[in-house]
Length: 101
Ligand SMILES: [Zn+2]
Image (cartoon, rainbow, N blue to C red):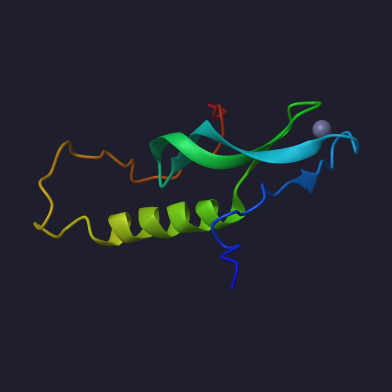
């Protein structure tokens, strides 16, 4: 046993955009909309190309975030957590950027 687990080499992936760079692990700010409300994660795990700067959000983290949001949505009626701010969700789904009148 040499304990190689502690010396984990940095994982990189070949960049699908420029084909020459490597996607390296980084933390970026993630911003998206989920269930009609903005979601911001300041330190989201992602992969950034060192040549062209292409950003790929970490798939596992995305799945985790989605599960978290889904849980949060289902748990909203529970009084366990202190309510910070009521989330206003419009009853009708937005049909597009602009509606024809
Ligand atoms: Zn690239």
